[in-house]
Image (cartoon, rainbow over the protein chains, first blue to last red):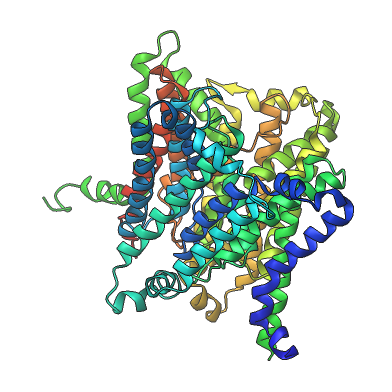
Length: 313
Length: 323
């Protein structure tokens, strides 16, 4: 039993959950009042859009690419949702679908021309930001009624953010980790040549993964507007870095198609809670970004230790 | 037409093969498209401004280029944070006094040295891809800079500020210095063991190691150098813009990578060239100037900047590396 528990594989898998549990325990100890329905609701609300953006980033990481435009894209979706989706729903829906199409096109472009995704998505981040500024030059707009209703939902017993996070994790986990096509998708990150030889189109896989990233980025932007009720082009600028950090925290490897949807959601929640933890400690918000970096380095160091132990066997 | 009959054909053909040529062609075209629309400001003024701002792009671009040349996955994302940290530390230490210019310089480079060493320590000790290592460390550096520089409103020493804005016949003195710096680094890249090692590692790290190249030492030196150039940029930029600010490094993430890519250096590593950095930096600045001159709003300007970068990388990406 202990051997199974201490196996590097198990340790690696439970590391994200353990870090989250430790952080949560520390917060409860510092501020016992957070251990309530309202407390958890308030602390975890903003974790939902971040978790969705992290899942989006995870899809891209899965095929060995990196998306540096996700924050700007979520900002674009937020601006569309806060304006067109309210005033002119067909136009709004078309703009959101266009976003997903652009993502799919980027996947194809990156694959066909063998381009570095960092540069392409860095360029795209300017495009999204520019379009968002054109749609909504000044912060404003309103949230569509139904999104606000959904995000402010008062579920019985368990706070809505926890239910939402669980649903996101389970749905993506089942789709990506438990279906046949899901393992093909992950395989394209692990050994593209093998997948190619087996007759699967790598182009199609990249397009699918980027479109999924676009879809989840869209959900993130809509969820964010449901919480903030007004839009701004720069509303999600932090999401690019948060999503990468969250995915890595949750056990996604940078190459090789090793990803974990549940881990990514847990990673996103950990990062959100880290902010609350610092403010309960009365540490200046200046160190908020630094804490993200420190947590990231700490978890990566632990993982490196586990990997080294594995090699020694 | 054979090369023997036309003595100009051979050098011309060789020039056309240079990967950096297109960045300069692009910069020239954009410049020509801009000058008819700049009443009051002459073509020379536009060029002076371009050289002034391109200088800072080139300084960070040199470091980033050596890092990217190390091969796939190698990129330094901590450049913006390092710029901010070095700028803030140097400005605070110098406290506006001319006598302390040298101290500030040493302090800025000290920041760079520390950042580079930490970056490489993370890459080696944690065995994580450089992108993640430099990203994580950039969070820490950024926070340090914010905490250290809060409420920082110190003017740079007047002599240093004067040096960064000085001109000779309309040409910024700083730009001349950085052109010389680029020339020196071109020699380092092409003619020294270190430079050839960087290129060899980028082409095939395993082969380089088997050939007896000190791979670890070369990579360490490259990451430290990138951070040093970023801190130098922060030091000069703080002096040039009348003090350090917390977002002074922001645009340099895109800029440092873009000048390398547009300049014709292979993003897959193993092939680099210095002149392209200058062409690309001028091109990037002139594009923004052109869009500004045409009176386009911020939104359109962002969109076009992004699309141009994607278009350039798409055009360049299809080219097979020359072997």
